[in-house]
Amino acid sequence: MSALPSLALNVGAPRVVRGVRIEHVCGDPSLSPEEDQELSEVIVRTALRALQTPVDGPTLFEPQIGREVSGAS
Image (cartoon, rainbow, N blue to C red; front, side, top):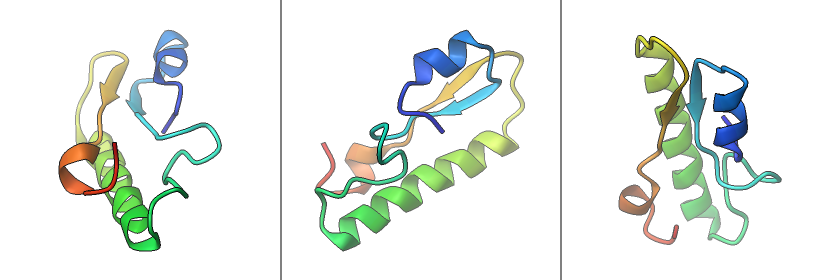
């Protein structure tokens, strides 16, 4: 997981999950506690899917944040 996915991809990480911010990769403290937990769960589910997905080279996995967390932008 990385808030700077281009950096991780450039160094050859095989799977990269886009995080939110450097200081809060798996969450957003500006959201309500419930929305923050939903966001974290979406990102972790994306990471689990990434681990199960065969890849041939550096691959970026994008959490579907806007659709699953009502307060995320």
